[in-house]
Image (spheres, rainbow, N blue to C red):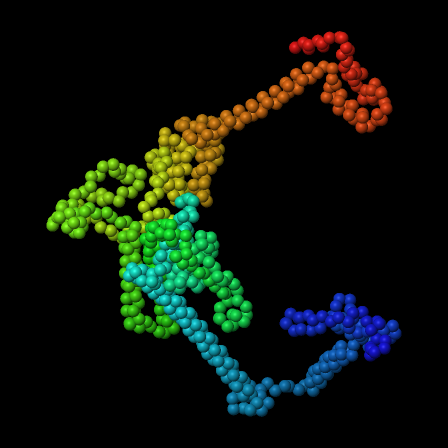
Length: 639
């Protein structure tokens, strides 16, 4: 064609692909079915055998005459050179055998059988060994240097973690101390109390386990700006660690809950940074940023300010718990740093140890003070007028009257339904009542003065535990099971008339299989054994709840089956009565037969002809007699 240097008429495909070998080398590869060389209609078109086996498209010629293998120039030259080399080696070996020439066993220069360092020819072996030793020593030094750098990197990371935990502990301590001294830096306590009040107002039920919302909100409030409450970005994993969560899932749920309550607003969404951002910032993830709603903009500012004040004690308790958790994390991180430095050959300075000790003591003191203040907020005590000096002066009294205890009328002891807070020792005067720090503060989800209703004790709690202990002593495979679970299983299945001997005897008589010696789940196996023994037709020697329920269930099923059978019988009776009342009509069999005949035959046939085709009596096919005018009423059918 005009304007082209090569003919593209006979080319199959001009596209080239790039493929990579197993060693990672790139090469060009043609598409399947395509050839790299143009195909001409004339000439010898024979591919090379060796190149075709290797996947190369090259043309060859039969070098040894017609019928021999076709080889290209490179393959034929390589094969020829190899044959010539083998022939030369064979000729040299034959010549040595004919001349009987012995090859020298030692060095050609010095004649020594072993290499000598002073010889210029055989001294290379000593140099090679020295080179190997030098390379080995260099490799050991490089490995030691790399290990040292890795150890220093670990120490640096551990120290950075200690510094971060120290800053977090100091921030918590400053927040609690500022709240106690009524400074602006104690605003996170009010923000946390606002979150607890919002959650309590939105909660519809007090059931369920305690969530991580309070601790996560505490971390957000302390991490945010202390004056404005903005730019809180502690991070998901860091929040889970500082709040004491096992995973990041509670943190995600708590963030979603806090946003739904309107306590905070997410201004920046966490995401994975790009390559340029990772190079610039040195981290792979961008943290989410929250702005906490100010107190003067919340729904509880004017209407229910007392609700937020109610939860100040709970907020202080939560911050005290976070402070204790941070102190434990800091102690563990410091121990890890000390272990790494001792492994690296260093030691901990005495002044550093003293500083750590003083810091731990200061944190513990702030924690105890926060809990004591929370107790004062939570349990305010009332005093009589005689305890106030100003009230005595206003009443004209110079000496306050003696204190008299209030009569305990209308009080009910909670010893039967729960624990009592009063002392069990008699004749002990503990002095006036004063507030003290409690070891078990009330949870944050519960208002300050409300107490949870005591759960009623089950009826079997009086006798099931003794029976469970006796059964565990008798059956060894049940001894490792928890006693409350065994008692609950036996109490829900048996009655108080049973004994361990009677239960063992009945189980072995009612079951055909022997009991297992080591079941995987002893409590579940006990439940299955009781179900198998008490859910049968035979009555046990004593009354059992499971057997009574089984008999009731069997009676209900029998009643349902009898009701269904009675319903079927009533339907059959109704059909029979209906057939007896309509004597002049066709039967159901006749109607079905006539429907079949209508589908198969023409409509012009007479009814007797259709009945004859179906072998149905004509009497059944005739229409009933039609009442004529003046004949009177039809006769009533006889019952």
